[in-house]
Length: 174
View 1 (cartoon, rainbow, N blue to C red):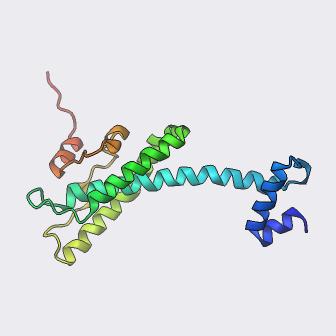
View 2 (view 1 turned 45 degrees about the horizontal axis):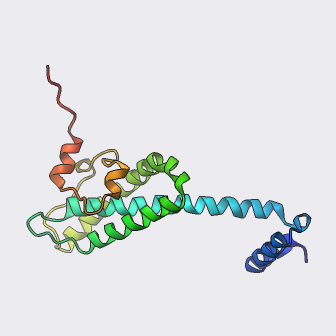
View 3 (view 1 turned 90 degrees about the vertical axis):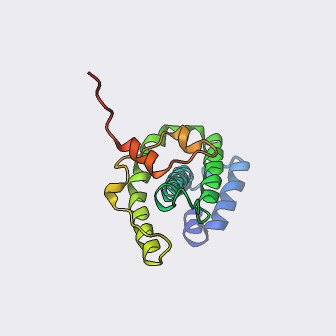
């Protein structure tokens, strides 16, 4: 069976055979087209993990800021998720330093997508009587309100009031 056919029929067998051929330096026998595609997908999976971790982190930071009462401090485990995402995100960036080139773009894209999740979560929590209010899209910052250093800072959380101050245009002093 050719390597190409093996790739189509049994990916695991193909990957083990490809690894063996590489170790033995039998390059002429490799299925280069599929090998290149798989190596590219490895890099893309790291970029997707960056997006997922940033999105989850920002989503839960918004939950904490907008869906908890400061006086209550009830965070429904969101702070646990924030701590874990910060740890995993720092590790991902340490292990893949070239992902730092994608941070600004990835943060902006992920933030744009998660805003809807926060609005929907507020509606669900309101229906279930966990909170007395809902959050509208216009209540949230339109663009990502954090810098990467803030997202990675252990123990750093923002209240709704602090988030709203970040939304205010800078005042002009004459």
